[in-house]
Length: 135
Image 1 (tube, rainbow, N blue to C red):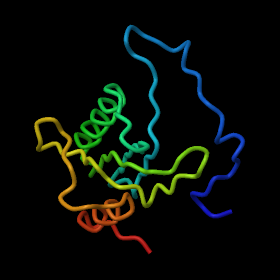
Image 2: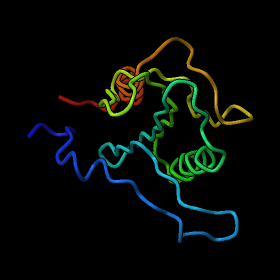
Image 3: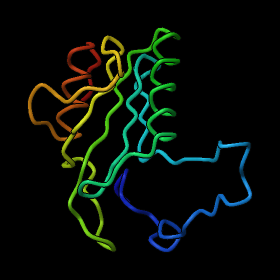
């Protein structure tokens, strides 16, 4: 089976019920993608359908993970991307459009990309910029 492809559609379709997991206002969130590159860099991304909002807690979790990884001297790329694939279709994460990039230099830590980018283009640009080479 091709790496990164859906292995078990039935298991992938199962919903996670976090109902019993709550501490004050804190509840679990999910992150759509995390990739670690050779102990040097991390990419964290969330995919949203159409104009769906990123919940405050989910954005905060990604923001804090990016900040903590950077403090650990890792290069980090955090992204929010949008797709237009209705359920139950399979989302092509590589071609999702990046709408926000985590940037520690910006007050809110989030900014739009300088130019239109897909998730794949953003990751490849990030890797190239940081001298992380792949075959």
